[in-house]
Image 1 (cartoon, one colour):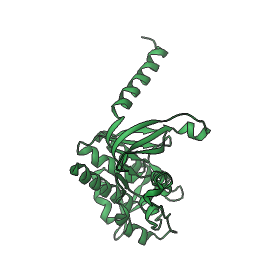
Image 2 (image 1 turned 90 degrees about the vertical axis):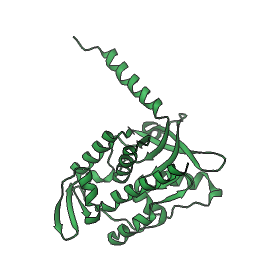
Image 3 (image 1 turned 180 degrees about the vertical axis):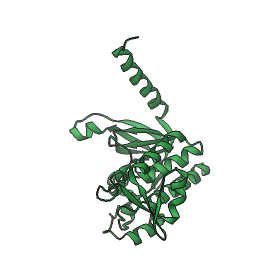
Image 4 (image 1 turned 60 degrees about the horizontal axis):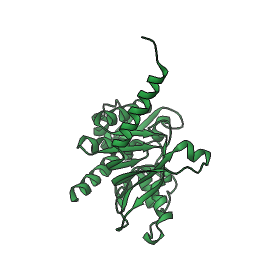
Length: 257
C-alpha cells in the first residue's frame, strides 16, 4: 500500500483538532514546560485531574536541557532525590547531600512520565492574555500560535477554560506579568528576581510557590521572580519540589470547589 499524502494530512489535522477540542475546557492549565510544571502536571494527572500544558517553544523542558553552561549535567539536593526516583532518573552522589544527574535524561523522563500520566502537552502555543469573571478570579487562558507572536501578526486568539492556572514560565513569569498589566486594580506586582544566590534562592522557593492571585499559582523560577527571590543556577531540586507543592496547592483548591 503506497503512501497517500492527503490521508497523512487528514490524520494529523483530525487527531489534533479532536484532542484540542477535548482540552478546550480543563481543570488545570499549566503555562511553561520546564521541570517544575512537568512535575506538577504529572502529579495532577495521576490524581485524575484533567490537565493541559502549554509551551511556547518547539521543545519542552525549559532550561534543564542545557545543564550548566551547556555541560549536560544538573545538581540536585538530597531532598529532591525521591522525585528523581519516582521519575526513574539516574543520579550519582557528588558529595554529601548533593547529587548529579544527566540533564538530557532528566528532561526526557520528566516529559515521558507526564505523557504517560495523561498530561496533554501543546507546544508552539503562546499565552497572550488571561480570562477573568465577576469575582476577578482567573477563569482561563487566551492562546495563539507562537509563530503569530514572533511575526507580529494581528490574528485573533482562542481561549481555554481552566479552573486553575499554574505559571511555570521561568524567569519571565509571563502569566503573572499579564495579570500585573491587565488588572491594575488588583495591585498585583512582579518584583523580579534578585542576583544569583543558590542557597538562599533554593530555601525560599517552597515559600514563594503559592497562589498569588485568585486562580493563579506560581511554580519554579517564576515563583521567585514574582516574590523577588534569588536565582539559583543549574541546581534543580528546588524546581521539582516546587512543582510538587504547586500540584498539592492546586489539588487542595479543587477540593474546595
